[in-house]
Amino acid sequence: MLCACHSSPHEADAVVAEVKAPIHARIMLREHEEPVDCAGLTGVVERITCIFHTSSTTCHWLEIDSPELAARPFGTDLNACNSLPPYGARVRLGESPTGWELEVDPSGSRLAYHRPKDSATVAYVLDGVVVGANVTARVPVNWSEVPTLDENLVDLFTVADAETGRRLLAHAEKSGGEAKVVELMRPIAESSVDRWFELYDRIEDAELKSRALVALHERVHEEDAPKELLVGLIAYPQVQPADFQALLADAARLELSGYTDWYSLQPMLDELVARKDPLAGELACRVYGMQVLSSMPDSSQVYYEESADLEVERGALSIVALQKTKCPWVQLALDNDPCSESLRCLTDGGLPDPEADLEDPYDPITGEAIYVARPLCSRAVAASAIKRLAPKADDDEGEYEPEPQIGPLLLGAGYAEGVVSKELLSRNARRMYRYQYPKPPPPDEDGYQAEPACSRPRNLPDAVCKLPLTVNELVFNNCRARIDDKAQVVRVEELKAK
Image (cartoon, rainbow, N blue to C red; front, side):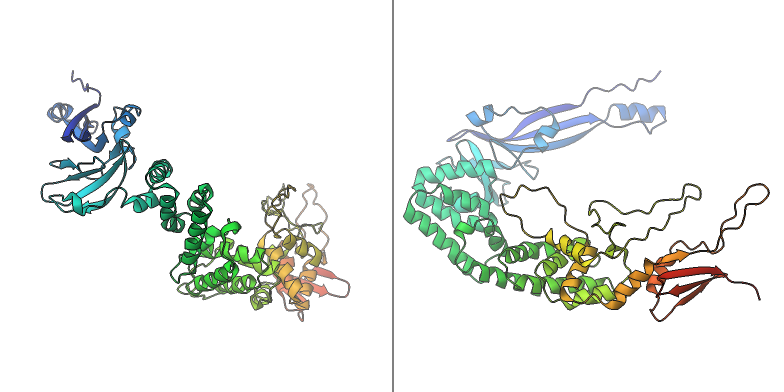
């Protein structure tokens, strides 16, 4: 009997390179061995050979012998190594360090690891932990040509995670006081305004605080200032420059000129809306126009990359409606699909729940959907949908109201602009007419009730809505529908054979 027994997976750690002074650091290698899967082999010889084979996976890290290292327990499996962060007393190395060398500068604040003929990666060490490795150096390493920790502090702080950032900040305050903190702040603003403000808020010296603010405002006014900086400042009005609204407007125009992403433009427009700047509606109208074009037949996917993005359509239309912007695309969208289900309200005229899908009930016998006549949303109801979009005060604790659906917003914008045509209203009124169908035939001797003639199709009201208003008669199969606009009735009758 052949035993396919295996030993458990095995991990082995080995020191690849090591330095002991002025700090103790080493590059470690962990090799994970486990049996090869032999389940697919059937031959005895092949299975015996396979059983004694193993596959190995390796992981490598740099560690600094320090109290921080001792305070961080390290697992013995491969996953513990693979999940190491790029900062700390242990950091994972991205490449195999086989044959690599490790050296340290006299201050103990910089480590270089490299292969004999390759360039070296420089890791910066502070309080026994690696706080970044963003510099390379030629081999052999000439430490006088490599930036010191203090010289590289700004770049290290800019990309650091929260914990490492706090460590670097404490070092900056200890070595250079608040003036050093101010030096860190300008590049930080471009990557995170939140972090910039956190630093700004902790500065106590009024002159240094003013210097930091001046530097921020200078950067905001530079031609190549990133839009992320402006967007980030929206949340901090207390540090915005006096002409922030004008800067934001210019940035929004520029963003739209090379428009590819609504989600980059939207926060700027939302802030302009809050400031009652009509430019927001003007720019939103352009975006909405692209959405209308993209929904039309033969639209060019090359020029309208946001095709069929309902969130973009809703966002742009919301701003147009809220600011009551004259936008010709609103009339075009309404006239393009005047019988759209999205323009309809509930049977009682109320606003549909934006978070629920309106589904027609089903006939329990036939299993087919039963047509429900839902009226066009009225001017007042559509206006209430737009009212939901109005910015709420920070202390407003009113009941949560989800954003309305696109249809009521479109109608509301149309009513406000006076572009909801009489034809659209009349077509939808026809859809709500009373429909008279032929009486069903009497049951047969077995009690079977035959289906009334001309009772199909169920969506006849939608078809009537789409007819030109000059057409008052519609024939289908062996049936005819006569539209009486004066009586507001559609009479369906069976055609008699001649």
